[in-house]
Length: 49
View 1 (spheres, rainbow, N blue to C red):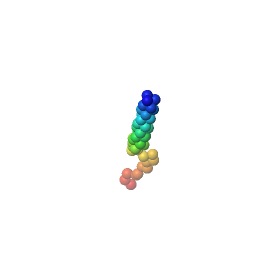
View 2 (cartoon, rainbow, N blue to C red):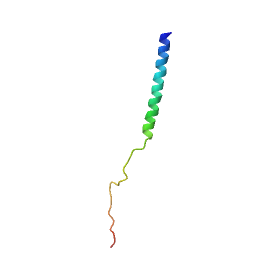
View 3 (cartoon, one colour):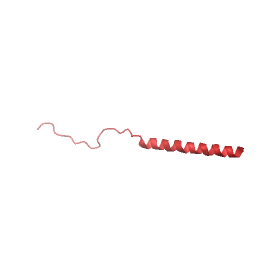
């Protein structure tokens, strides 16, 4: 009986860990990265001609 209980608890812990890891990965993928708002190329416009 102890082996059955240990196996059930191990399976439940493994399932909980898998669900937590899945939610963590989804949360990381949905996170928006901090990107600076600076253009890579800037063209200077003439002021007044």
